[in-house]
Length: 407
Image (cartoon, rainbow, N blue to C red; front, side, top):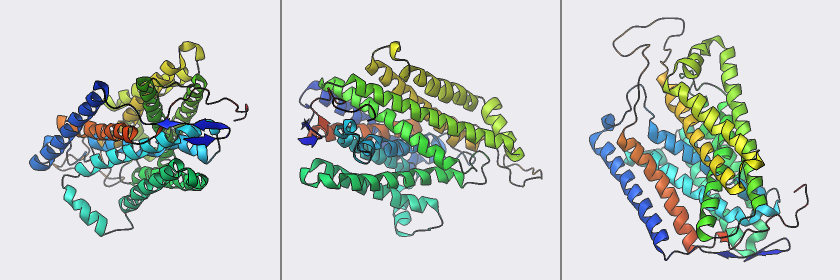
């Protein structure tokens, strides 16, 4: 039990004795085993069983991993709004927000490590640091994020320590901004790839994390409350939907800035034509996947109250934002590698090593299985966490009661 303002908030574990709970846990377990089998196949047979080549070295597992890592950072949105910015309506959801953040970061890191081909080499990366490499920075940022969020959850769940929640919340907010900045900077610092070389990658990834994380949180909240038959405040869901729409619009803005600045620079016109007009599947994913289905349609859903019940509108909009996020990351990660490297600007090179050729990439079943395994691991962590600890209020009805209009 916790007190939020004048209200007593009662938290309870979810029920876990029925076929639904064990059935869901069993499905997650099977998908995790599928992911482990895919990782073993890729490690035992070699990466030739994937669609990756010497030209495209980051494949579909990296799309899954980066999606989950940036979503983990953004999933802490709701907790930050409640404790750091003092919005009482969001404070009962802070615990669930932290759980989703930890689960998705663990799932994303699991995919990332198992996609290395030699997971044992991680020990080398953890004991020999090259501080000029942004990948080395990320090891500290990921571990620090897990520790901070765990401490953040502790002070929220221990009533005697509630007074420390705003300070730890602020620390977690700053840390996750640094984490997402570093993730975006991995691409921004890669000057050899014309599709990546841009300072706007850092704020773009921050905006993506906020929108994708909130979309994931919305789906988890709606699904669990529906499953447990726990009341949800329609006005609160509407507010979460409008916040999601605002964040989606910010992502669209930074995406437009990225492409417009590249079009302004003559050296990047070729890659922009490839991604926006001549890239085949990458062009389709950008315009149809990210812009139309992943941005414009969700905006219409969350800002059109007469389009249907709030739960349905916000749930559908959140699912579309997630699909659009996958499409966006696929275009960034794989589409950026599909454009040939300009090894000697101003010169033409010719050899038998695919100089100037546009490499093709088709994801394989092991890659897809590994990505699904990471998502299933995150889902299993959330499910077990909700079963063994009190992360979710008994009811969220009347969450906005007593708030002033400016809140």
